[in-house]
Length: 269
Ligand SMILES: [Ca+2]
Ligand SMILES: [Ca+2]
Image (tube, rainbow, N blue to C red; front, side, top):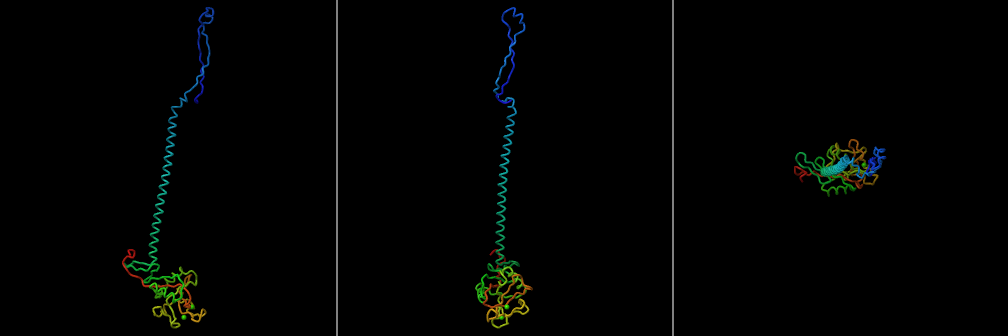
């Protein structure tokens, strides 16, 4: 029952007559009057008070638990974000270190066998030599001088293994089929007598002429073709990728210099 409801009660009143014997005898039974009394119920749900407090208390506990759970979830989310951020930072740091080491290796160094063999930055180490693949297009003479300014010279190929290394490198470096690289071989002094830049003759058993080369083609001028360029962008059959070419043509080039030997551990330079 809600607060403010009205209770109805039936009350019975008995009254005795004060006088009159005739009436008194006739009315031996008491006179009965009925009255209705309205009693306003002003107390608010007293019967429910005993159970409301525990319900309210239970509701409050549930709300507190919900708030605590929300806080826990937020904290967990923040913690996960922090851990994730730390992982990303760690991965970035590791990647930077890896890149740095790779860049160092790419610059050319090797400390195997306890002796550091090192090349200048941007030179590539292979065997006992360092190689630099130029990015500028110059004549054969211009390329030779460029290599000398870098303390090297146009490459001299002494073995099939060296030819294989260079041929593989050029596959990735050539932008297009004619983007070939000068090497240090020429017959400028005497047609058909091929000499390396150090004056040594080419070993006939160690040449890698492309088929139909050298042809001393004079289509580009009366000088014929007295300098050698190499490279096949799509890879050379059996490493055969030497071409004689007019020395005034503009090409990139391969410079070579002896490896630098130093302390046992390159990374502590
Ligand atoms: Ca020639
Ligand atoms: Ca040719």
